[in-house]
Length: 94
Image 1 (spheres, helix red, strand yellow):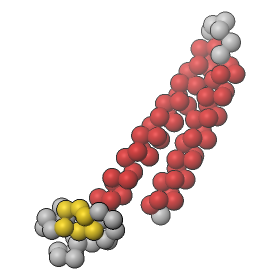
Image 2 (cartoon, rainbow, N blue to C red):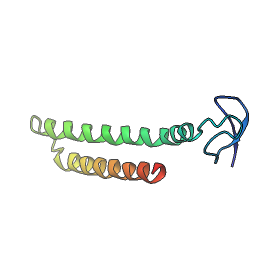
Image 3 (cartoon, helix red, strand yellow):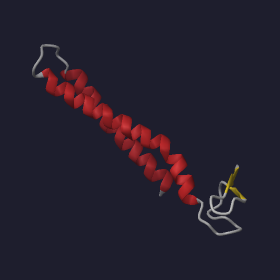
Image 4 (cartoon, rainbow, N blue to C red):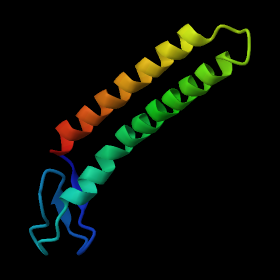
């Protein structure tokens, strides 16, 4: 457990505290926002993989590169990755 600074009054507050013991300002929103940044980045990366895979599927119809198997693998990987990150977000913040 680390000590953080209360955004309202500036006193030292435990990172596990729900609110500041001095001014009763809630601390949980700040904690959730800090822990969720990495998960938001993973959701963005999974979405980018899905979009890239869909564009590869569309491009495969116009070229002779045979990208369909790679595009399907990327699409399904992106979907599973996105669902896994959504489950982690639910698990950590529920």
